[in-house]
Length: 312
Image (cartoon, rainbow, N blue to C red; front, side, top):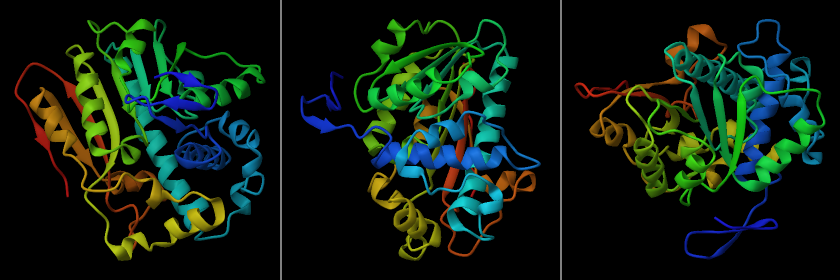
């Protein structure tokens, strides 16, 4: 991918605008960051991200977003319910990545890293390298904010400006990834927005860079949502109040069975609903739930029998 100011070229040479974090998928990174900032101020926070509020305040389009849980109305579909979802997702995936390092993995790759601050806030073991892959404009915005803070990463942090719809593996290995060693991959909030063929291409590409013992965690939706679910308050509120049209940003059409594709490549794969973790959070199912189709998938590459565990 070639960067031209705020425009990138796709693999066919067609110019496509890059709105950074001010619009489109980039703005969802600010939505998630504000959810993490709210969670950090709760008495019993599932995850504490001290950087999230700085990212949100650096974007003028978020000036009216709440900065304190006390300012959130009970039952607010975005800043209470969706924020609770993001807080739980953050905690579950934090634990997943740290679990991989306990097992000895020292290479961590954040695909579509957005405003993820794990390279700065998690207690990485000595010798851990964290690569952050995202579009150039997103990484530049993020770096400007971090440069204004008195902080240093807790791992060897390396940023790789790429568009994951293009060929990104060469840029990652050029940045030092060693395919002969295990990798802990994370695609948090990425596959929802990629075309089906791009999702499968990313999964296939990362498999080619994954030694046995590598792990992967990602988020998907289980099938297409009904019209009733698509009319859920969380979607309407995000669109009308925040200018984040999630339904328009989600990739259209049927989604691929990436878990099965990975299983065929010798990954043991487990698929869970967020509500499987609900006892540890404020999240509870609702009628016509916009979160009911969400699935968190964790995988481990091995050389033994192939296993797929599917939960409804």
